[in-house]
Image 1 (cartoon, rainbow, N blue to C red):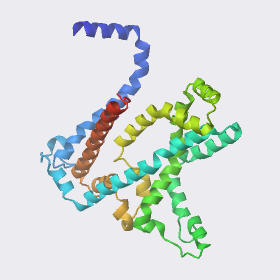
Image 2 (cartoon, one colour):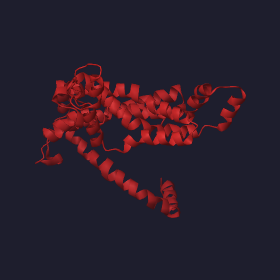
Image 3 (cartoon, helix red, strand yellow):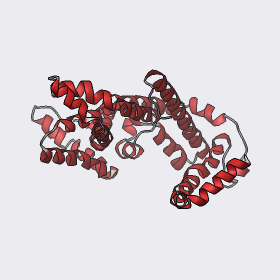
Image 4 (tube, rainbow, N blue to C red):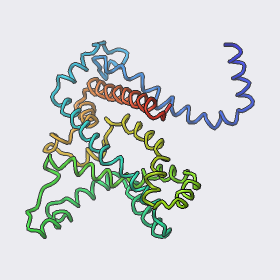
Length: 305
């Protein structure tokens, strides 16, 4: 132990510039990620803002029992899983498809213009995105109702109908993030050995065959890594966009765990129940990441660690 400590101190003296550059990141992690973990014990206490965390009595798993006996939380959990599964089903392949399409464009001017257009929504504020969605689906002047009106269909109040919330939310998320997310896969494609394509051309392969036989298999490790990360975030849904788009009429399909935590904690003052819900969310995400990583390592020999 003493030898390892001496080696570490010697290494720090020799490479002190690196540790100085690393210090702000370490401090940020300690202050904003590790220090708040002290507050997780609220989930196991009958928390009172007047008594504080230390002064509040322990209640064990009472709040977790309350959660699973609550129809509202069960509904939020169900909606979270459904929306996340649909988002993964339709949203995860889109950046890959876009990256493959961009890679096949030969005209550089057209390629850069198209990339700029699909990247742009990522840099727009979520509030503005929500405003665009509300305007587009407005029953009076929205472009969607205007188009369906040309076919003699009566205006539809999309954002007040529970059955329409999920398609609108998922479609908005794909429009906002798919383009920017494709950058990762474009970078992976750029790292493919050009000699593979040259050999394929000599063998008479078409561009379609090269995409399926060379490009996709070459970027598969990147796809698997991104999929594992996405699985870990399966219970994390764009909280801001849901808050801005949903309303009591659509709680049936729109209410998710994060909005449940917001209403219970900030609006209802039940900080202990909200903390229990947040801890449950984090534990499930951890288990999913570990499971997905283990399966991926055994099946494809590709993993996060």
